Amino acid sequence: MDTTQLLVTIIGLGLMAFVGWFFFLAPHQRAAAVSSSAGVQQVDITVKGGYSPNVIEVRKGEPVQLNFYRDEESSCSEELLMPDFHIRRDLPAFQTTAVEFLPQKAGSFEFTCGMHMLRGSVVVR
Ligand SMILES: [Cu+2]
Image (tube, rainbow, N blue to C red; front, side, top):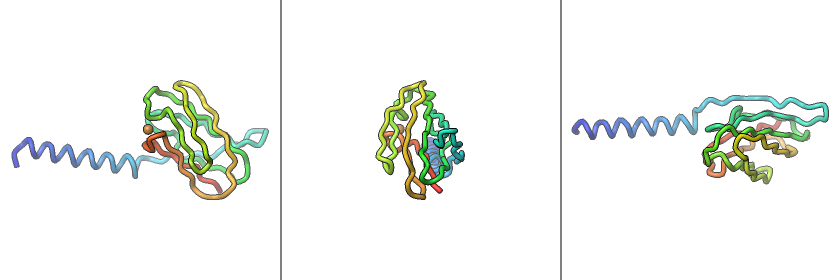
């Protein structure tokens, strides 16, 4: 194996490690919803190369409002999917988009960008 092959191999392994880290071990930031006076559970989420926080805890049976502020123009994050709640929403850049739903059963429900690359989850208790 010459130096170039070795270099390519090392870079390849490095990329695989990064992809693995990115999809499986990227830090999870948890946030519990805070109820407004109207009884709506609210969480502010920043969208920038990911969702922050990306694990949202809510209580079952109370309406939820997630306020997505998209702090970038990267096309990756322009669409939001929450398949379990039948939600598909465009997130305009540098604006806050409120997404509302009513969690009716306990569990963990994923939300993603339109390409399923950025991920987060709503944990209903
Ligand atoms: Cu994407």
